Length: 117
Length: 111
Image (cartoon, rainbow over the protein chains, first blue to last red):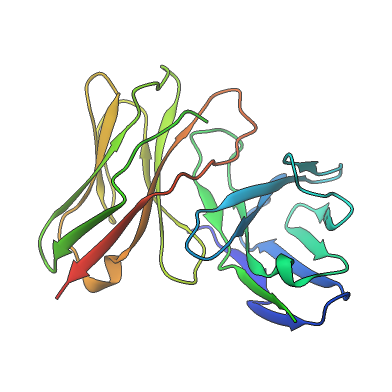
């Protein structure tokens, strides 16, 4: 089946530094990828839609200058958390779809646990 | 995406069938019903999806009501590894294709 790989699975960084998270579709091309954030005991919240070759679309309340998204190829999207603060500590999850319709399932990475100290 | 309503939690005994309900009374004719599950500390996993007819795959079955205002995910024989949060989500034609997650149902499987 379709596989989405996310790296790293866990990262600890100091306040003020930046962290890059990679999301790769391993066996299919994805023109669109989605980035979610999940706080403990809560559901997933969509942060942004990553579009290959164009600018990402951010959800209301998500700072585009803080969460930089780059989708440079059909198999790779990256999320960079810039100038991280402890409140950015969360579980970040990416997803992608093999097809481009609502009849296509989404496949998710295994998430990145970010801890900012 | 249109709203869905699920019970917060359910329990099942191991090796017994589990029926997870979902209400989606505002569903439109072209909305697809998707189910995902999330195990602790992992990303969500696709389970099944359908439009009108009941669907079966190796993981589960999806029973869709005739009026499509509700659906039921059926795990035929629950195992301890099926303990997870199950999300029922409608994907709407014309949306940006993302999934909007509700709170889901926490399934506990008792040995």
